[in-house]
Length: 280
Image (cartoon, helix red, strand yellow):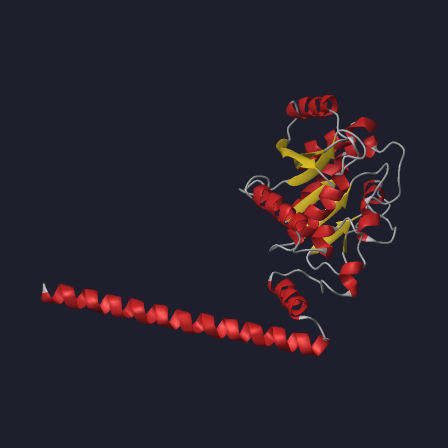
């Protein structure tokens, strides 16, 4: 009994010592954090909150100065980049968490096609902000503009028009993936030059092979698509991607169109990752 009590006292003493060391370490970290914030504040003539936000952006790998010019170079709609601490950005991170547990979990890697029933539902807005959110996470993210009829991601990212997906599928160029300046971890494959009838290219084996290569090369692949009311493009892309996220817009999307698209998707091979209501 004496030995048991002695052992118990020893364990309790060790635990108390460990807790004391942890408290001392956390206090040092807090003091160090405040010192870094104060130093940043004086160096760049910022308010305390602004300096803290900048350091937080570095801690959580937000790859820009949230009060600097890099953040302001993107479209106002790219809230995950321009306002990473806002409620809207947090909603995209919450959606990211759900997708990590479904689409991007397990052994079978997939790409995610972001689809909508009608033009103006906000799928490009959704795809772009989701891609930024994923790029702030561990790993490499690729955003593909597969809307070969009326591409819109170039406007949000403020990138130059250059050869893209259409040119790769046509065999004009071998590769057109570029890193997005100011957003470390995010890469972009633009649509290239708009086409009136891209279905033939999307049906070809070259597109399937390209997607397989991109899924193998990147941790997360997200694809913007044309709306379903302009043709079968989105369904073709989703079938080759392996997963689809359906976007509807509050006050805009019609229930009949959403139901029709869901019915069409349910007979295909794609995983329906979910339906998101866009209030933007």
